[in-house]
Image 1 (cartoon, one colour):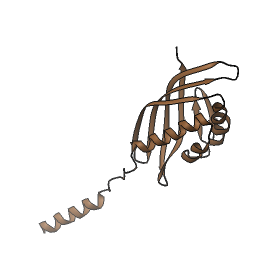
Image 2 (spheres, one colour; image 1 turned 120 degrees about the vertical axis):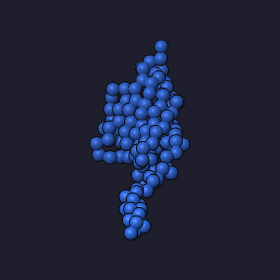
Image 3 (spheres, helix red, strand yellow; image 1 turned 60 degrees about the vertical axis):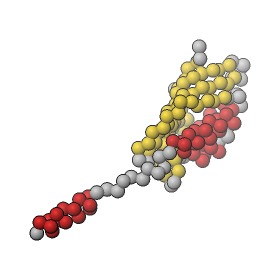
Image 4 (cartoon, one colour; image 1 turned 45 degrees about the horizontal axis):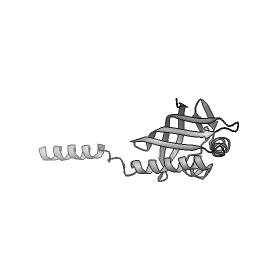
Length: 152
């Protein structure tokens, strides 16, 4: 009887146990590679890395320096492409990645240089946050926010 009770308890515990979550996709190098693709896309005015790595969902908003782009097309057409024409140089450093299940985020320090159409040189430093969701075997950017200020 005692052995049957112990066996029943073990079976009940095993039924309640949840499998360990799959963390095989928790690789900082994956996020860092996406960020590098995005950085180069900004500099070259190339929307392809954005369309590849961003989740284009209704209601998406991307924030930068107090402004926003609503949706992925707005970000690429009205922000990425025009800034490349200004000779944008963008640097990411001090990249820190964090993972929780199928959600991840990356923090970056940024350095931005460009020349406005009226000849004004811009040199800013700041910080950015990229939020990611794991879906269909890939990390997708679901939101970004960045802010910078002039280098003095």
